[in-house]
Image (tube, rainbow, N blue to C red; front, side):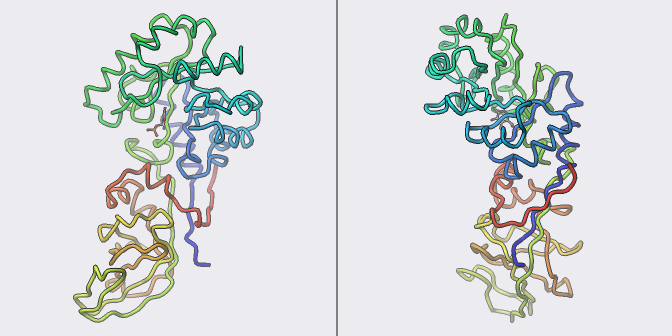
Length: 345
Ligand SMILES: *Cc1c(COP(=O)(O)O)cnc(C)c1O
């Protein structure tokens, strides 16, 4: 077998959810959009539901439909893109709750699913989704009269605790929801860690469940083990990989790994990345290819059968750093070719 093995520790995800849940008085939901950040929404959400999670957030109605299939009728599933054209049957039949983002969506909801549950998103400064203060001012009384299940907004800078934007969005959220007597939700993972003032009735952690920053105390969730296809000796002056970007300075032993950028191991990782065999760090040499990566095993003293690129020695965030990106992108890019193994849950 030459495909890499991605191991997802569902027990660690549950432990991370419980740790974040313990920080607040209110309810703790789970953001499982984008297939639970690439880790498998069905497995992840079922494990969290067994642990007591009752509310889930997805990006689009189609994700909500798949999640309803996995979870059955009980849990609340909120669709962050709201009510888009063509969504009414899926939302209505499967009991998905659209998070209404605009007056247009509000009209669509009221016309096609009158009396059915919905939530609202307010824009408190991120300028991405949700009603702006002026729009909200015009529909507020009508919208509140229809008993929204939840009002949410989203923080732009929650992973930067000292950023002035946080307090500004908090203030705007409180102003815009003053007097509303439905549940409120503002905090993603970063927001939970900022201060209890951001928690309100429901928090919506995503990345912190999956072991990523800013949840510094999170238990690691993923490990990725890649088989070595071949090892070879390379003489000083010889090169490795496309465009000859790496030249041996000494007699070297090079291992070729069975994964590449088509598996979400970004080409931009370049030579800043490492992998590990047992406890030894091995540098990546040359360009990352579509299906292959070269590593220098000269100092290891033996030819490894497999190496680890994510796990005990290298977190999702350190690998992301090497590629100039964030843990979220590493997770959601994890390859479709991996053999997936689930632990616990
Ligand atoms: C993705 C998302 C979350 C979860 O954010 P994390 O930073 O991963 O915790 C919460 N709320 C909304 C609206 C989101 O889009």
